[in-house]
Amino acid sequence: MKISEDELIIRGILYDEYRAYENSYTVYKKLYDDTGAEIYLFKEATSALMSRTHILESITRLKLWDKKNPNRIEVRRLLIPLYLTIRQVKNATIEAEYLLEQSKEPMDLDLASNSFLYAGQFKRALELLSRVYESVPREEILLRMIDIMDEFTGERKRAIQLLETHRRINIVSHDVYAKLLSLYQKENNIDGILETYKALYQQNNDEEYLGRIIDVYVYKRDVEGAIDFLETDQSRNDILYELYKREKRFSKALSLVDKLYDQDQDAKWIAEKGVLIFENSKDKNDKKMIEDVISHFEKAIELGNDDSIYLNYYGYTLIDKEVNVKKGIDVIENALIQQPDNMYYLDSLAWGYYKEGECDKAYKVMKRVVDEEGLTEPEIIEHWDAIRQCK
Image 1 (tube, one colour):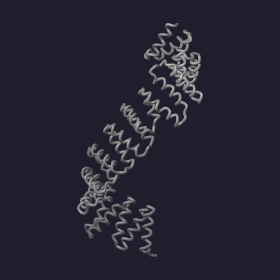
Image 2 (cartoon, one colour):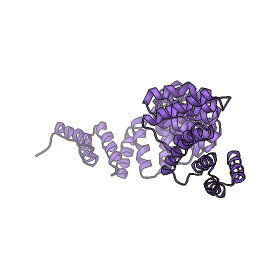
Image 3 (spheres, helix red, strand yellow):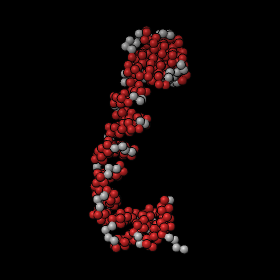
Image 4 (cartoon, helix red, strand yellow):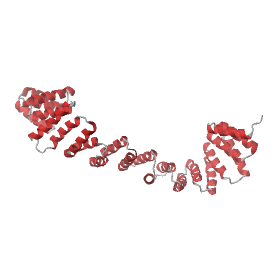
């Protein structure tokens, strides 16, 4: 029983829909053989291209039809990718030249560029893609141009300029930023990398990009730049706080610490405030200031913060300022339970023993500190000299 043309058409459409292109090739081949209608020949060739089968046969049938129906642009559009599929690059470039004589449409310039790219004629391919991009400034066209400029024509700086211009006037995908980062890395352009991450962060507000921005500032050793950025951004006051402390900008850190406590109610910020009040004070022996510092540590401990860093700071303050040396020693011993080999905590303990007049115990602990750390820090030197004289 002969299958009707309508039924064959329906079969071909269904095979295409399910991407069964080898089956649709067979259907369209029969339809063309039965009817001679060009549309079926073109669909037959398209199916061959999509299935990557029967390529030579499709080329032969298209060429035969082309002799009878010369200068049909549809044939050029099919022959170029068919030739490229079987790596007949020379034939593809010949067809591309014919296509360019017939059409200046962006889609045809784009198609022709593939032949010249495969043929290693990179400048020619780039020139065609540039014309396409001028007419239709699509991102995918630009990225193909960038790859050619980066890998083949040695125009990396121009590629960066094109990408930067494109992203400033268009909404772009992550691919554009990824390519920019790649090019800036190859050019060792740290400022370019930084600005790209800033643009990504502005677009997506992703914490990952903020981390990368800070990493770049650290790599550049540009703490001031990082501070300026974070002061403007105001989304990571915790990082800004640490930078303030690192740079000994204690008054600025003090202006942040209450905000940080309000955000998460973490008692560590109360202890941090105690540290800042002391460090920011001009008179380190001011009794009212010392009372304020101690009250902050006690409040933090009462609220459950027993981090050894703050215990040591609190205990040392009690000892050094002779507020309550015995209690200070107890606090330091609690810190040493957490970190028994911490030389700074042992230094505080030795100083407590010294203040209590227990010179032998102070000497034994302090000698361990000096043997481990050496005499490089002024405070250790001061304690060591005093304890040796005491002994």
